[in-house]
Length: 53
Figure 1 (cartoon, rainbow, N blue to C red):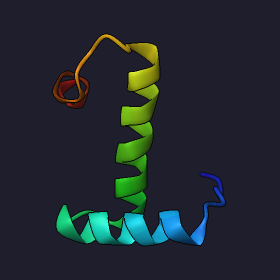
Figure 2: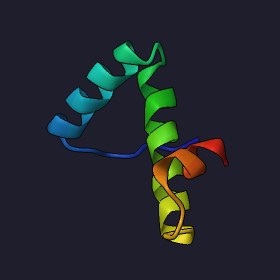
Figure 3: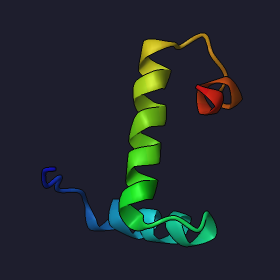
Figure 4: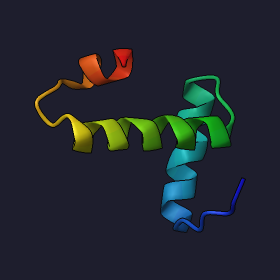
């Protein structure tokens, strides 16, 4: 486990999204990181397809 520094705005966005999705802030950040990684690896896929991966 490590520490990742993010902007205050991104932290606020994570806080809001994590509440809406019933996830912890860390779980929400990890979810977004995974989606972003998959989007770069598979640019031809839709967001729905990436979420299913």
